Amino acid sequence: MPDNLTIVDHPLIQHKLTILRDKTTPTAQFRQVLREVAFVLGCEATKDLKLGNIEIETPIEKMTAPYLEGKKLCFVSILRAGNGLLNGLLDLIPSARVGHVGIYRDHETLEAHRYYYKTPDRLGDRLVILVDPMLATGNTAIDAANELKKAGAKEMKFLCLVAAPEGVEKFSTAHPDIPIITAALDRGLNEKGYIMPGLGDAGDRIYGTKG
Ligand code: URA
Image (tube, rainbow, N blue to C red; front, side, top):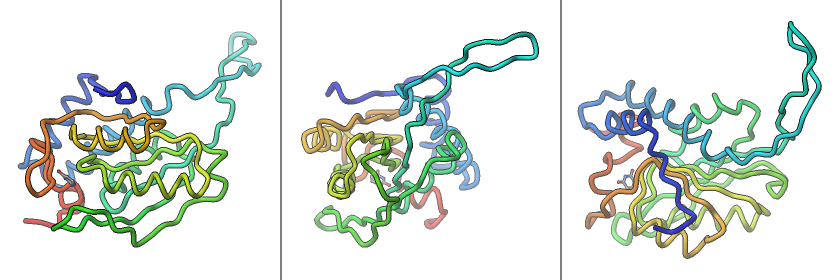
C-alpha cells in the first residue's frame, strides 16, 4: 500500500459504505448516506489544517482558543459522480470554493476525455481537494489533477469513497505528492473497468439513471 494512501476505517464509515454498496439501497437513501460519509471523509482530508489562537470569552471566563488560520479551500468535483460528495463536504466547510471538471471515460478504451473545466482563481493559495467517489483506472483523476496543477494548484488531496489497487498505483505514480483518502481499497477492476466488489456506477446510483 503506497504511503500516500489513507483508508478511513471508522466503524460508522464502514457501516455506511455497506449501505452504499447494497444494490437494494434506494436512490434517496444512497444520496443521504453519501452526504454523511463525505462529511467524515472531509474531516480526515482537512485534519492537518493549521490552527492559530484567538482570545475569546466564554460565559464563564476569558480563554485562548484554537481557530483556523484561514487556509482557503477549494473542492473540485469530477463530474458527474463527484457532485454526490459535494453536499457533505460543503456541510463541513460552507465557505469553500467549488470547481468542476467534466471528464467521461471512453467505454472501449477506458481513457479520459475532458469536456468541461471551471475552477476559482488563485488555486495556488488554496488547499484543493479533488473528489470522485470511485478511483478505478485512475485515468480521470490523473487528468483532472494534471489540469489543476497547470492552473497553479500546489497543495492537493484526492478524496474518494472506494479505490481499486490499479487506480491507486497509477495515480500515486503520476502524482506522488497528492495524498489519497478513501473509505475502502477493493479487490480490483473487472474487464469493463468497474471496481469489484465496488458499488456499481456511482453516477447511476446517485442520480437514479439506471433501472
Ligand atoms: N466508476 C464508477 O462509477 N464505478 C466503478 O466501479 C468504476 C468507475
